[in-house]
Amino acid sequence: MVLLPFVENASIHGIESSPDKGIIAISVVAQRDRLIFRLEDNGIGMSPEKLEELKGYLEENDDIGERVGMKNAYYRLKLCFQDRFKFAMDAREGTGTHIEISLPLMEAAP
Image 1 (cartoon, helix red, strand yellow):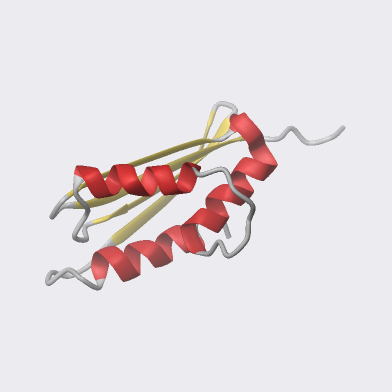
Image 2 (tube, rainbow, N blue to C red):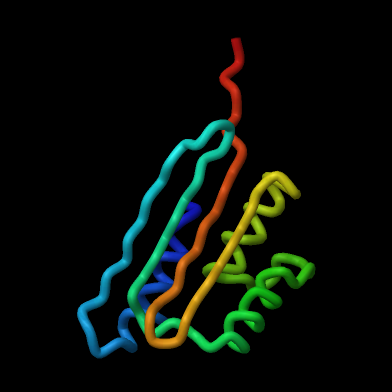
């Protein structure tokens, strides 16, 4: 469920606007004590200014209100994991967007 809004966003804003065949690659790996989700698309990407604007929008610290999509997922990750989750997003115009979400792995109770 964490990835769905990011996949939808990649499809709607990155792939549908691209004249080429769209690809969204998703991987989930456990590395040491982290679970890492990676999502990469070959869509239209975005300018550095748009990328910074989107990152700022995600970081806005307001009530949940009318949040939808990526902001809602980001807010819930922040709510559940506080500063223990890591989020990185990179994009280049014309070549796509890459998102990485890293969560702490929880130890099973004995």
